[in-house]
Length: 306
Image 1: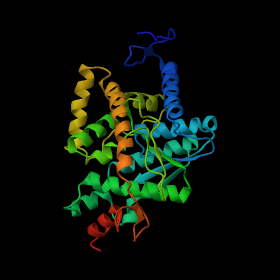
Image 2: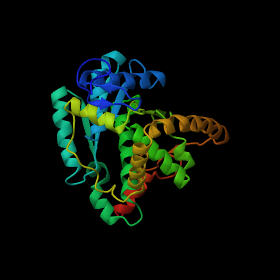
Image 3: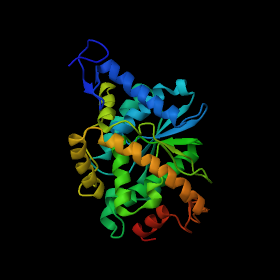
Image 4: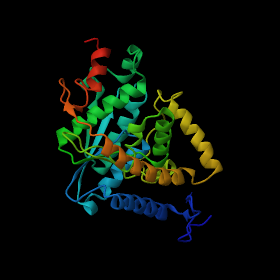
């Protein structure tokens, strides 16, 4: 097939039936992302933006994109790489990320679980009977994002969650009855209180396939592989079912997300009016929390038998 906008061969077809060659796909992808940023006011001129970058296709693409357009948005961009310490998986992504950062002169800072929690994730999972792998990883990663924001005096933290990721998360929260987590969904999330800064998701309406193709076309693709702990997890099950739905009903993810966001937005306003949650600082590390000791410190203490 030919590109819908020129006579070159097409490499991608979008949900609406448009065909794109390499150049027009990159243009489409970048304009779509810029539109999300501007529509939801994700970035302001002069801000220092941290980018959570795992070394995978999505985050590599986001760091590359924001660095490419940093003058357009008038921002400073910092890549934040968190090394959980999963042998045979994270080390490959870290190696690829460092290669890309050197090639494109990207500013990347690495934070390691071993440095702050005294243990690798794969070791922590073997020891812990109380916490699942994704719980430990998620809590500690959020703590390190907070630490990086303080260290670098960041204004916002950008993550590369894509449309497929967000639909999976929303459905998981619905099925598990997690109303509070469900209300955190959207392109611009997080509370601005104490040491917390907002989190933004510029790729919120980009599909997983679009992120992968953009990454490949810009020579950013990482070693192909998935976190070994995701297999058999609830997200893995939800994801496989959603892939089948998208194949049968093209546009399912996009339509679902657009409609559910309206419901979430209205529910979020009502929830804020009824609940006035006060934060305090963890007595060990100072992390903003509703508890005396934050979950990151709690897990660290239990796993390290302190």
